[in-house]
Image (tube, rainbow over all chains, first blue to last red; front, top):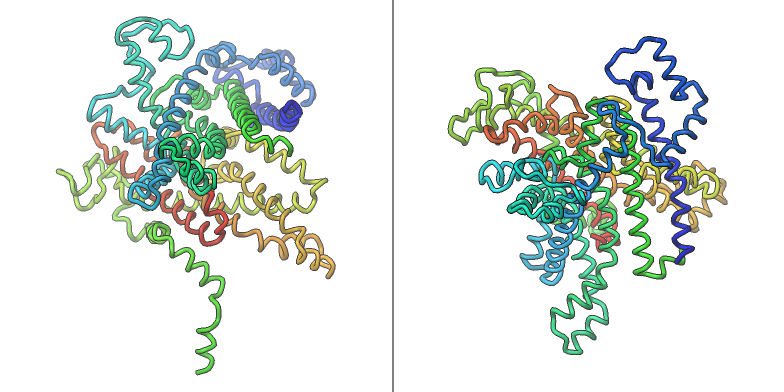
Length: 335
Length: 298
C-alpha cells in the first residue's frame, strides 16, 4: 500500500511543477509589465519602478525568479493582494470554508438523491420510473447551472419568497467565526433562528452546484447496479431467502459503489468549476467568487494563487480517489 | 434483374448499419431533428430573424412574449432591457454558439489526435513529456482553465474558442493514444510496416481510421461542453463581448430583470439547455451505434 501511495505521489510531481509554471507565467503573460500589473491603476515614477524591479528580483534571470517563486509558495507565502494589501493566504483562509461548506453540502445532496434515484431506476428497469429518472438525469447533466440558479431564484425567492437571494446568513445575525462553517457556527452561537437562516441561504446554492454531480451519480449508480444485479451472488442472496431490501442494499449497492466512487472523485472538478458560477450567482463569499472578482479587478497575485490552490485541491481529490480505489480493490495497487 | 436480387442479398454497408443502430434509439433520433432545426435556424438566421439582433427599439423595452398580456406579434419572444428582439438575438446567437463549438472541437481534435498518435508511436521518447503536459492541463477543471486562458489573452470570440479548445485537448490526446496503443501491435499494422510503410503513414493511414469511433463520440461530448462553457464564460463577462448576441452574455445582462421580466432570463437559458441536451442525446446515439461496448458504461 505504501509503495502504491509513493508511486502515485511521484507521478504528481511533474504535474505540480507544471502547475507552478502556469501560475508563475500567468503574471508575466498578462498584457503589461508585471510591476504595472501588480501596482494596478496607480502611476509610478520611473525611479520607484526601477527600485521595485530590483526589489522583486525581476531583473534576474527567469529561472532564478521561478525558483524563488516555488520556494516562496512551498513556505506558504502566496503573495499580497493588490487591492486589499492583505496576504493572499489570509484572504484564502477566510474564504475557503465557505466554498468547502457549499461543495460538501452539494455533494451530500447529490449523493443522497443520485444514489437513491439511480438505484430506483435500476430496480424498476424499463418502466416509466426508469425512463423518467434517466430523462431527468440527462437534462440535469446538460444543465447550464448559471441559468438553473437564476430560474430557481426566480421561482423560490422572487415568486414564492421562500429562500433568500444571496449571502450566507441574514444580515441581522452577527455570528462569531469559530469553524468557518456557517451551519456549525450558527448552531454554536445559540442565537434563535440563526441556524435556520443559514440553512435557507445554503439550500439553493447547494442544489444548483449539486445538480450535475447528482445526474452523473444517478446514471452511474443505475448502470453499475444493473450489472451487479446480474451476478451469481445476487441470485444466491435471493435464494437464501433474504428480504429484497437487504439483497439490494447490502449485496447490490455495496458492490455497485466502486465505480460510483470514481465518478464522485471526478466530480470534484465539476464542483470547483461550478463553485465559480454558483458563488457568482448567489454572492456566496467563497474562493470561486473571489477568483472571478479578482480577475475583474485585475488583482493578479490573487488570480495566480487561486489557480494554484484550485489545481492543488483537484489533484488532492484525485489522489484521495485513487487511494480509496486502491483500498476498495487491491488489484489496482499492483499496476 | 439479377443485379437487383444480389443487391437485396448483400449485407448492409457500414453506413446503413450505423444508421440502423442510431435510429433504434428514439431519443437520439428526436434529438437529431431538434439539432438539425437549431443548425438550420443558425444558418438562415439573417432571413428568419424578424429584426436586426442589435437594433434597439427603445419604445418597446421589456415587451413580454406574444402569448402574455402586453405581448406583440412582431417580437414573438419579447424584447430585452434595451428593446432588442429576443428571438432575433437567439437565432443569431445560435450561429455564435455553434460556430465556437464546432471550431473549438476542430482546434482541439486535430492537435490532440496528432499528439496522441505521436505519443503512441514513440512510447519511450515523446510519450512521457506529452502525457505529463496533458496531466497539467487536466489538473485544472475545464472552466477554470478557460478562465486562465481568457485572463492572458483577453475576452473575445476567437479567444473563447482557443480557451475551450485547450481545455478539451487532453481528452483527445489520451483517447487517441490509448486506442492507437491497442491497434499498433495488431497484425495488420505489422504487415503494413513490413510492406514498407513509414511511421507517418502507419499513424494516419493505417491506425487512425480504426481509432475513430471513440474520438467521434468524444467530439460530440466536447461539442456540447463547448456550448456550455462558451455560455458560462459569457455569463461571467469573460466570453464574447456585448452587443454580440451570445446566449451566455445575454443571460449576464438579464440578471437584473429577474423579477420584472422573467422571459429575458428564461429564453436564452432554454436555448442553451435545449441545444446542449440535443447534442448530448445525439452523442449517446452515436456511441450506441458506433461502439456497442461503450453502451454499458452509461
